[in-house]
Structures are given as C-alpha cells and as structure tokens.
Image 1: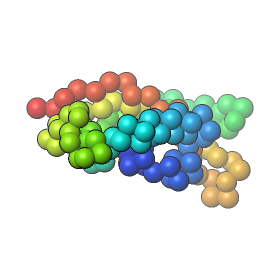
Image 2: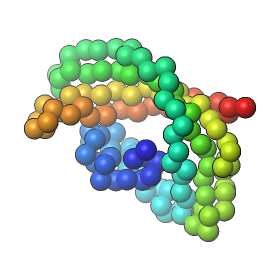
Image 3: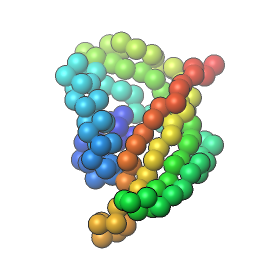
Image 4: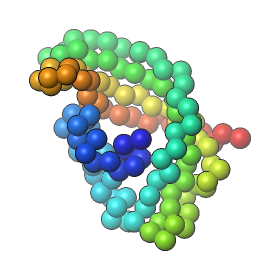
Length: 122
C-alpha cells in the first residue's frame, strides 16, 4: 500500500536503498504526471517462501505471492486515465527481503520487488 499511496516515509523506512530508489523514481514520475493509483488491495494469496539464504548482508528471503487489487489510475482532475474502478487485476509479485541487522527492532527490509505479470479478473 505504501507504494500505491506514494507514501515516501514508509518506503524509506521499509526498503533498502536500491529498492527505495526504484520505487521513489516511480512515485516521483506519478507525481510529476499528476497521476494517482487506486490503493485498494482486495486480497493477498498464495504466499510462498521460494528461497532463503545467508548472504554477505545477512539472512535473505525470497517470497512470491499474488495480490488482487484495483487497477485504476486517475489524473489531477480525477479522470480515469487507465483501468477503472471495477478493474480487478491479479498481480504476481516476487519480493526479496533482508534482515536489517542495524535496526534496533530487527525489521526485514525489502531489497528487490518484481512484478512478474498481471491478469484481469472477470
């Protein structure tokens, strides 16, 4: 939701530098164009841990899942420029997390996010 809402503060806190820079660039582009994404995530399903390793930066997890979400992009005037209010899409993601060993609360940080595809739901 932080990405869809363009919540830069949450993205900065929960993403490693490279992932944050990628998402920040996308958020900035949206803001520049005056576009807003619908933030409704209807369901998260089929969450699978597809990999786990200890790398130089510490424990790393690869998680695959799909989310049913509304695909609706509006402009500054609220006019729909892509999708629609009833356009439900199933989006397939792969996210990579690493344990932030420097944080006092040992939070996991997103280090990479890939959208593997999406399909329109009927």
